Image 1 (spheres, rainbow, N blue to C red):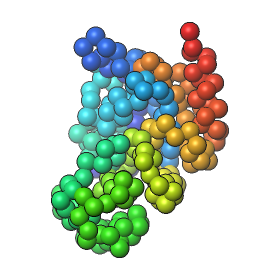
Image 2: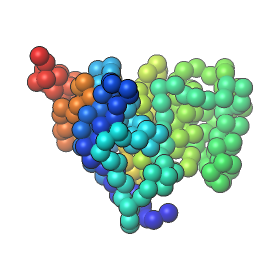
Image 3: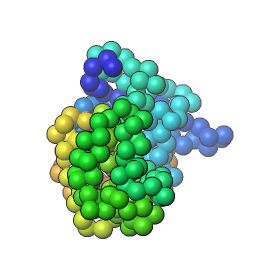
Image 4: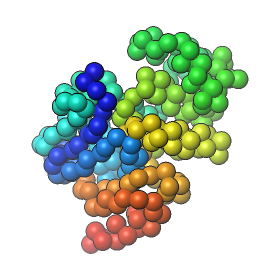
Length: 234
């Protein structure tokens, strides 16, 4: 596998969709053990940024560079990514246990990890119910377990708190703290400006496809966001 993932870097990454510039000359380096909040209004380029990091999109210009003991190509980076989008993309006819067992089989993960993750996201009691009967919060917790089952080193969470109840948010914050302690790279794309700032080592702000702020250390996300957008307001 080439050793543990040390960093992922966008170097002047630009992405066009036809004539539309979704992301323009974005340079951003993420290192192991960081949890980075990505903020910005709708259409700012946040999901495009995630797509480039996940290698599901290729930059139109610039590059995405990942490093472990050596440089990794896009397929090697993709194998180390866990991505949870705002749509859970679960198979509603399966039970929670069946869904995780299916993913475990694809990745060669031991069945004991299915049991572990069901417990970790507090779904053991509901593991044998059809996913279609789950609440939004339960589906999102299962999506988190599915993404983390293979122990990815780059974790991308796209609007993970949308529609979550208090219990599910607590599970999410705990998992993010655990991932940071384990040395993972975690990117949280969010509109939730009330998220605990101490969870994040950095926060960046996108506006109209451009990176307009990059701050380290705990800070109110709402204050950072407001100040960044005020600086770029016409």
